[in-house]
Length: 155
Image (cartoon, rainbow, N blue to C red; front, side, top):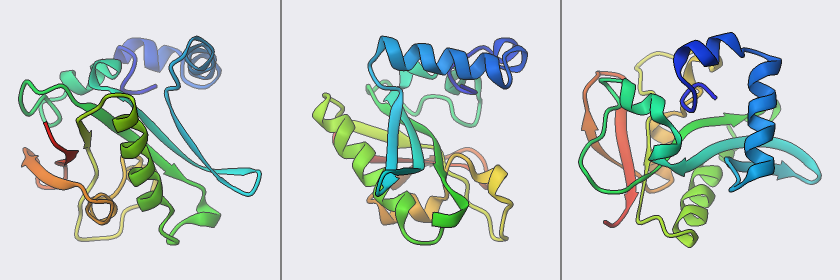
């Protein structure tokens, strides 16, 4: 919900309020993201949708629009601790891009973190650049040493 809501609403709704808002989005459709399962257990989450679904991206100087092309965005990626380092984030990114293309997306964009040192998991909730690369994304712009904007697709 961080990228979907104005900052004051996100902060005011932290916890249950934001969970209610997300549930409302799910009920109203279209789906606000994808869930990855291991058997019947959810183990991964990837937020995805047209960039307009995430107005917070446009409030960021680092993540501002690259150009005027219509893009779909992946602003959040989560893998359960027990499932990390098994390639699941790469698989989620590939599937999210495929899912978006089936819904008309020509370009899918992500905003991962790239650092030289290991980061605590809570600081990489937008994904890691190496995972995006492995999933077929390429860097198109970097306004910050640690935040590339990466894309896949044609458009």
